[in-house]
Image (tube, rainbow, N blue to C red):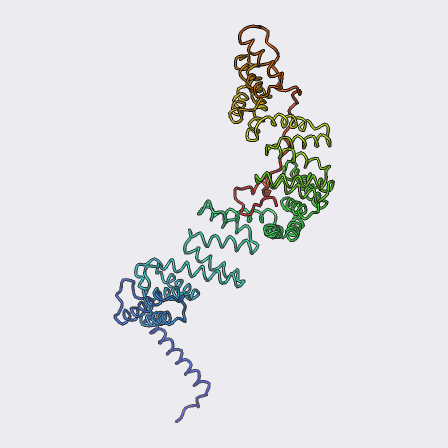
Length: 536
């Protein structure tokens, strides 16, 4: 008797069940075959032969002038040998061979996946059995593959992908500087300054003198302090300023200040850029803002005065003065004088520029011209005590060679502050440089006379009188000193002056221009900002 008919669906179900069982058995068999052998287990001869074939192909590939590439004939053979070896035997040696083959042929993505698989099975990258190009370690190959892969993703705009690769590399090698550097950069670019701060601090622990790390740390600190939007706009401004795109620079600094109205450094640079663009009226507002927050900022004080001078005396004169001060700060006195004289030529009433014209002329040893410059200052500002002082000094310096002029000025300053020992030593240096200077010898005599060393005074005044016989005062004091040295007169005369003009009251030095450096807030001030710039 036949049983009930079997439905087609039941047949399919039975077949499906059998298929599952068969596949399961096959997987179990396959899994059993794929169990990795212990590292110390010897490789079968067949596997050794395949690996040897791959090594030979790699040696040819390394010797080839062509760059390694998976499509290159020799490297293709290396990759085929690696795959065949892994299929024959799943073993640490074959897996490592395959990973190294990918890396050496430049297939970075496959190399990283293969190395990670090797690590997942507990096989370190530093194992000694590296048959394929053994002079290059697996760790070195991993580093190169990771660097290539991460940078390729970064260039493609996949910053998150690049960050994952660097993070995995850092996990594998915690003291490697390169992934730390890139993670600091990537997290900063992606608007996470707190994370970036930790990476830059770590990099400075690894490389304390690394300028890029110092700069990165400061940028991260800046973003934490002022916010990513303001910091990004400020960076754009600095980048534009450094290549001379002043309009873009000003826009960047102004945008940074708009994003964070408390960002004083942005106001500082906006004011500077506005000045260089010839917009002193705009600059005044920014410099005033800086001084409201930082009243003791010498740079802001100076540039505010410069902006006001440009408004008062004209942009052309103000720019020339700006150029002159930049040249002066760099030590190029000739260029400084040319620019400063251009400033007073553009506006003859520019008092500050005349002060610097006179000063630089004096520093260059052009004492007659310096006297003319100081006289012009006094015409514009009759009450300027420093101008009177330096005019008199310049007149006296006309009596010595230019190369002795600076020493002469120092000697006079020492004498006037009653440091007679220093003054005499300096005057002696002056007459050593210029032994024909009656002026310098008269000062030597004056010092000796004041200290009642009459014999020394007589010698010095006598030398001065011989050099300038038309000056009766020199001959008179030489004779008086000689008489006192002999004891002919017990009552000394008052200390003689070197020339009939009365000694002026010393005034303050002309105020110097500020150091041309980028301002930084107190909490970010550091030795290295890779981007500090000189006065334009």
